[in-house]
Picture 1 (tube, rainbow, N blue to C red):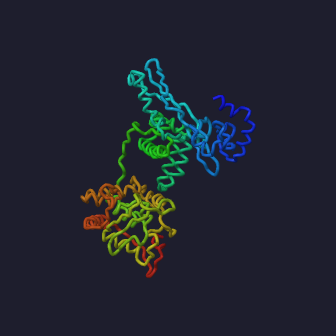
Picture 2: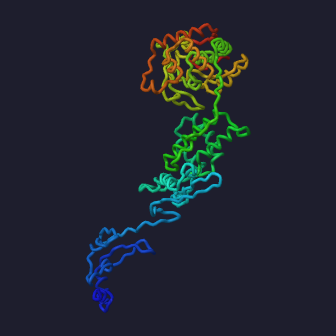
Picture 3: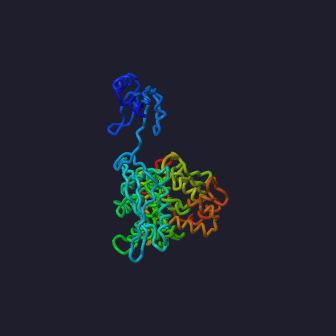
Length: 478
C-alpha cells in the first residue's frame, strides 16, 4: 500500500502529471460550483501508477457514464430546492400526528407536499388536516393508518407536484377553456353563477376549499338577508360548481370533491302558467298577422320561441303537411336547436293551408316569419312587443312557455302516445330515443288533425296578397 501511495504522490508525481495530461481524453464531471468541468480523462484514475483507458469510468461504482465523442458524461444528481426547480422526494413520508382538543380530542395529521406555482416553480409546503376524533381512532396506531392512507398518493413513485390557484384565477381559466364550448344561452347563466361563487370563494386556494366551506356559503344564501336566494337558484349554482370542480380534478389541481354530501335547500316548484284552448283562441283573435299564425303554430306544435324565429320558408313542406325544426335563434345568432337534434312535426290540414300564404312564391332560404321592418323575428322582441301587451289586455299570466305547457296538457287529454309527446316537445329520453329516426307516422297525423280542429274556428283576417308578389314585408299588418 505504501508503494502504491508513493507511485501516486511520491517523487514520481511531477513525471506522472505530464504523462496524464498528454493522454488528451476528456470527460465531464459535476462539481459544486458549476454544472460541468472538462479534465483529462486519465487524471481521474490511476491505479498502481497505470494510466486508465477512457472506458475505465464505466467501472466506477455509483456513477453512470456514457462515452460520447471521447467524452464521458456524469449526470448531476437531482437535489431538492425550496423555491423553483424540481423538488425531489427525499424519503418515504410517515407524517406526524398530534392529538388536540379539550372537550373533544381530535387527531391532526401533518406532512410535506410539493406545490406547483402558476409561474412554474415548485415549493414544498406543510399540510395539516383533521383525521378524526378520539372516538373514531382510539389509538395512535389507528390514526397512523388513516394518515398513511392519505399519504399514499404522495408516497407513490409516480407522485408529481400538483398545481395550485385561487378560485377566482381558476374560474377565469375554466371560462376560457371550457365554458366557451357551451351554448351561448348557457354561457350567460354560467357567468352569473360563477360570479356568485367568486364573490364567496375568490381569494381561497382550491386545495383549501372543503365541503364545509361550500356548505357555509349555501347556508348564507339560504338564510334571511340581502344574500338570500331561491332554492332553484342555489341548485343551479351548485350544478355549475360541480362542472368547474370536475375540471379542477381532471387537471390535477385537487383530488377531493367538495360537492359530495352537500345539503341543499328545498325547492318548491311553483305551478307553471298553461294556456287553455279558450285562452289560446283569445290570444290569436287579439293578435295581428303574422303573429296570429305564429301563436297558432306555437300552440299546435309546442315548439320554443327561439325555434319559431329560426324557421325558414324551406322548413315547411306543404305536400307532406310537415315542418322541420333544425335551427334556433339566440340573440342575433342562429344555432342548432336544443339537444342539437332536428325535430319533425306533422301539421294539421288547417294549419298547413294557413302557412301556404307564407310559403308559396318565396325563397326557401328566407325567414318564414318577418317583423314589420322585414327582418327575422327576434325571440325577445316579439314576446315583449306582441305577446305581453295582449296578455296584459286579456288579464292572463304567462309568456311563450305557457303555450308549451298548454300543448303538453292537450296531448295528455288526447291520450297521445308518450313517444309522440316527447318528439313534439323535444323532451326525448336519451335511453329510448338514441339513434332513433324521426318518422311522421299515423299517430302523429291523427294528433295533428285533432289539434288543428281546436284552432281552425278562430277568425283569421289575412292581408291581401298581390298577384306574383313575393315581398315578405306584406306579411305584417299595416
